[in-house]
Length: 156
Ligand code: ADP
Image (cartoon, rainbow, N blue to C red; front, side, top):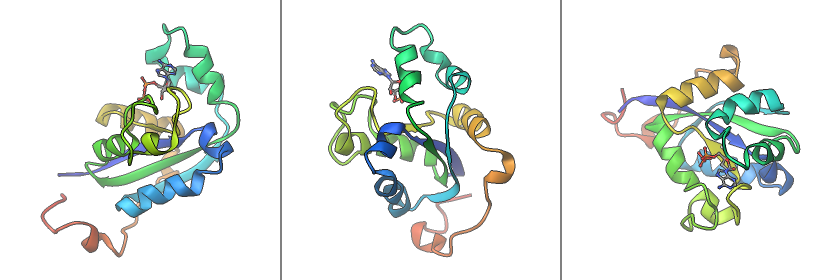
């Protein structure tokens, strides 16, 4: 299994509800490495690109507007199989349907106001990391606890 990087956005609902620290802590406690972290105010332009797969949906503009209510927190996370691990941690899109213990299942009552965005595959992760981070904002360092997080044959 290879080390992968994935993009997470803590949505405005998370910032407004004072959950930034709590959600970041979930990723840290899981054993994911924070490779990049910053706040940013999103624009209609970047969101039209980010949510282009939703452009025909009736809620497209509403979803974009909700992402511009205030700054979001963009996070680049790294770990073995990180893309799937983070999607599993996030849970399904609809917070009301998400299992307890998942982030959306624990913190969201909504389809839209669902706490986090998480990349859904290797191609998307690559494109999304490049969309929200400059190359120099993604930092390569090793956690000294790496050997406590993985067995030595679990990563490439
Ligand atoms: P996910 O974020 O789980 O990958 P999508 O890419 O399908 O889901 O949708 C992007 C975002 O658009 C969702 O996280 C959610 O905020 C919003 N959204 C998607 N579907 C709906 C819906 N049916 N009603 C309201 N908001 C939605």
